[in-house]
Length: 410
Image (cartoon, rainbow, N blue to C red; front, side, top):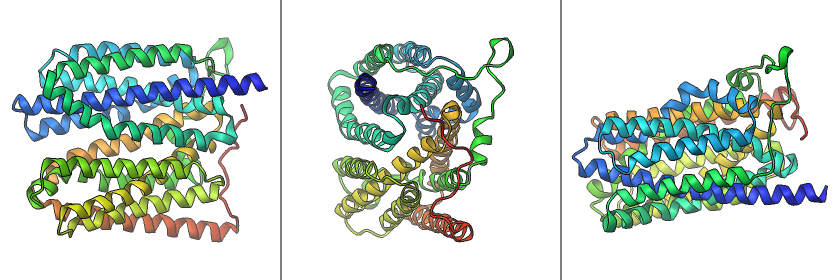
């Protein structure tokens, strides 16, 4: 048992280090490609396509990705996805065609979906069911922490060396992640086989989510919130530069403040133990996130965005970690790949759609109007989810809602 614990900690450390390196490389690459397209005379819709390219394919491939994760050896999937990511990133160092860049980013998004869903299903095997919340908290807080400095590093590298070197750095990070995946001893292999040694017929991820009394309404509500709130990412730069007449540095400060808040919120969420508290923390976190965005519409000075961003980031961190933990703990081990892939697809797809919608809505509404609309409607959705759960708990007379199936111990 002691050896298993030590091995799990070692594997978790490798996984955390690999994911941090990958997140850093991804952020550097995205900033570099955005700057490349802008310098090449790219239009706003082309930037929107770039930002959405990595998320929209997740929605189309979620079923296939989920079945792959639950029917194939985790090590093979992680190493294979890493090699595909390397193969797609190397051409980005040299390519300037928008069509090719977007296509490669779409393939990268699909490979990242396989890797992300595999890691999500594998982590409980590493740490044990009782430590899932702490592990999810560590993963998300460290990734957010890396994301604070990555855009600044990317800007510096592009300014000094051009866009080629940062993209080469991204390719190198995928090599590191692939090697890390091969070093992880914990493995997840399909446990259920049908006649002839083929995987048994299994429920799809969407079917599993729909059948869960907690996850179905929770994920539905979060998708609606992402659709409403995601579009503000498109107009933040215009709010700061054109509306508040502030310098470029304030744009970086606002983003860094939000991410710093997310780190704090993610760390705090890892201490929440009971499912009931995690449910309400998810709902409250989503509501407070939107409540922090609404005042962006009326601020009179750019510095006011900083405390609002910290507050919104903290709430965002709580909501993300608690929702991710519930996805893992309320799902049987054999089905976690499908559930993770489906959840990533619907939430990521909603984010991509929202980014595209933000570009269109910005042609009609001002940045202040978009923040007011997104923030207030988001708060209303969060309140509706809270009322739904309060009514459900009152009807059942229980402190937590029943699972559709009890998780399988590993």
